[in-house]
Image (cartoon, rainbow, N blue to C red; front, side, top):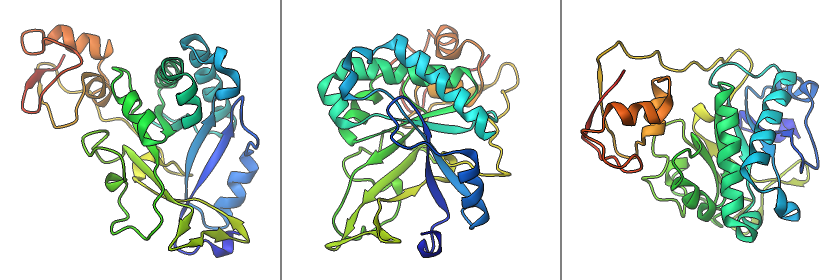
Length: 267
């Protein structure tokens, strides 16, 4: 299969999870590296529609911690390592509020371990998730098209507003399984085709680092698509968005609503 990949240089790795039908092992990743795959997208398969009673914040926290422990077996727990949660659309449709509570809590647990949480889903669930204050840092958008796209840019993903997760390092796009009427196959197997911002991938020898905290007393000008939570993560602000909100109550009246051009004080 690997000899037929062509120009691809990254691969999706299902690290495990309670609903995973197949879990990669560290030796599998090494085999792909030896075959020329240099980067990986790490995905954890969380609770799905067969277990709706487990779609809650407490279970999300527990499963987020489980994802961190699994990543330790792969040696992929450097600060800022991206890892995503698989949230299927049928799961969201069956329990919208519970699945979002679960996903947000999963992200919080992963983030507390110093990793960079993302969520895989269709545009609808992701748009609903964007409304949450502690939304994921990045998203893997499942939005299939039937013809070769004009642009292989995850920020042009169909069905997702450009204002949601607009920055580099915030998007992966699963755009096809069939192109121009022909199934995408590798080694006789049907596969999905994806394109990704490099910041959503991790590989051997690639150690992501967060930006250094700003010097005391500096400011930040809000950019389009920013949130307090994202800014706090960007600058590693102790106390998170709450600390940033408390410091800027003279400018920000609602922590969920900030506007491009506003100048925020940083601790």
